[in-house]
Length: 227
Image (cartoon, rainbow, N blue to C red):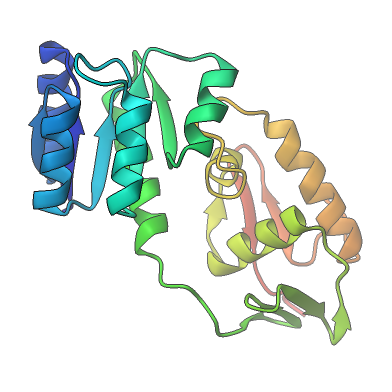
């Protein structure tokens, strides 16, 4: 269970979101305006904030800046503003995710779980080892069978994310959300291209995999080779 503050001026949406979150087991406090919402964030010290941009007393982007001045709490924007420039501007202002209305309860739940999972992950400093693959997060260095892998920053991030979920099947949508921080949409082709580059640098292919195993119709699993 997480403590969540919802700042949304539309009564119908505010009640629906609060009810959905409560049904998921979360403790919810809601506000219809920016300044009471900021007060709730300061007093309640929540695990997550859901923030609308079109508020009656202050634009949500201004409230986001005020929240960021006093707290590192994760913030998911919930708004009808869906153009790319607005998304980029808001994420650059400190939002952790961006959900465009209308959205389903299932999508809301998935975004909440993803953001909470990221915020609750302790910074990993110990090397991650799977078979002959070793990844050193602080040094941002990866080796395979003792040889250094020349990875781009995003290739390293992708490999580390998959390694931390070794043995699990990870969908492309999850990779877009967790590695690329794509708040919505996003092209799965981006994932395909980076996986192809990563495979080549690791000396394998999709047709002859060793570590990066495709589960058709589902996603990718990173696991040590059988031999």
